[in-house]
Amino acid sequence: MIDTFVIPLLQIVIVLNATLVAVTYMVLLERKVIAWAQSRLGPMRVGPYGILQPVADAVKLMIKEDITPVRADRWVFTAAPIISMVPALIVYAVIPFGPRITLFGRSVPLYITDINVGLLYIVSVASVGVYGIILAGYASNSKYPLLASLRASAQLISYEVAVTLTLVSVILLAGSLSMVNIVNAQFNARVWFGFAQPVAFVIFLIGGLAETNRAPFDLPEAEQELTGGFHTEYSGMRFALFFLAEYANMIVVSSVATTLFLGGWLPPFPNTPALHFLYFVPSWAWFLIKSFVFLYVFIWVRATLPRYRYDQLMRLGWKVLIPLAIANLVVTGIVKVLIG
Amino acid sequence: MGEAIAFYTIAAFVLGFAVLVVSTKDTVHSVLFLVLDFLFVAALYVLLGAEFLAVIQILVYAGGIVVLYLFVVMLVNLKRPPEAHQDRNRRTKLGFGLAAAVLLEIAAIAAYSSARPAPATAAATGVGNTEQVGWLLYTNYLIPFEIASMLLLVAMIGAIVLAKREL
Image (tube, rainbow over all chains, first blue to last red; front, top):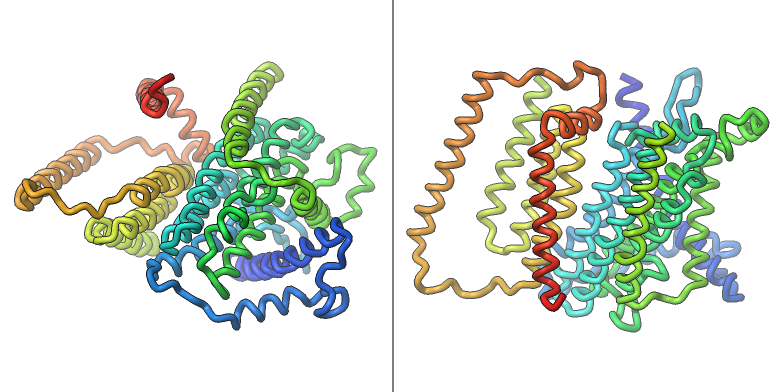
């Protein structure tokens, strides 16, 4: 009873709340890091060093007037932000923050569930998320959002191919689709898969930037060309949902990258006797540190690189990343067969 | 008992959304109901213990094919008036004919599978769902699998030829 209902429910509540808090503070972190990169201070007014800024933002967005354009498709217009947000949140069901640990004399897993098609589950849920963007553009019944949503979905579909191919090469190494087993395979291999699959790792990171519509691939929200992007007509809480979904997706990409390429909850070079002292850092802390590094890189890239042009983006995706990912997959397969 | 309740609930949703797909006037709404329908079909697969199939159902149909439907519906102007020579009666007859054919097919499959029940494979061997599907595809069903991939290859080449005429 406790193991099947109470603990999973508690885990879901904790993970959902922690994610939403993390998402709101990601916004603050991004503003602070970019301000630092540009020699500014960033938000400083609300609370010491602007630490309460996310709370103020949330209150502002919630009490703002929520406008539905007159000629919008009312139902789809309302559903689109929800469709964006939900896939970004339910992915956390299979992300392992740590192994089973003993808590108050009871063995508790640090993941909500471990299904044996975990990685495919993440890919398929993420592929449903694209509906939010397409429908937002369509339902607004307005030119710029429609153009932006077409761009966004073309970009998502293109980069999804490359990203999924890199996932397959990791699956080949791990021999499993379960997220927990993939981490365990890295424990047995004594090396993070990021070192065994450097090409896949780089392609995954670039694809991750593109899939979350982040700079330098933030064409769907290129304000100089498209006013605001697919959410131009949205306001108030519904706009906030799109905004939160983008950051939630960034956290998803970071967590998946951590699990697949940086050994999840494992310290560097796991299972090596000389490095056993690294286990004094708790497993979930390793996971959070590594995910945080990815999130920081996301912001860093945004502060550094200018935006791609649309044809450059498509050329990079189809003519560079996808062939490279396929070649990497073939080489991985051959090496795997040769080594056995 | 619980499984039966879950099955009939999900099946009711599948049928309900299927009816909405064909009865809704707005084409985009109809496509969206199709997505919901596919999601509930995936739920049926989970109920059967075929979680690999369920996830692939969502990935390929809900996340891939229907997105293309949506593109076509959104970008092509479908609000044309129906052509004059098309009488409704003929379409109704055609619809009934097709429905009868599908019903006959389902009845034949049901009769066949009750006469020759499939050997129970799942869970008996202790191997995961994904491994079993992969194993069967590359042993017992190799030729159908290869024919299907040839079909996809032909479709892909056809698409490229259509898109790049001067190639």
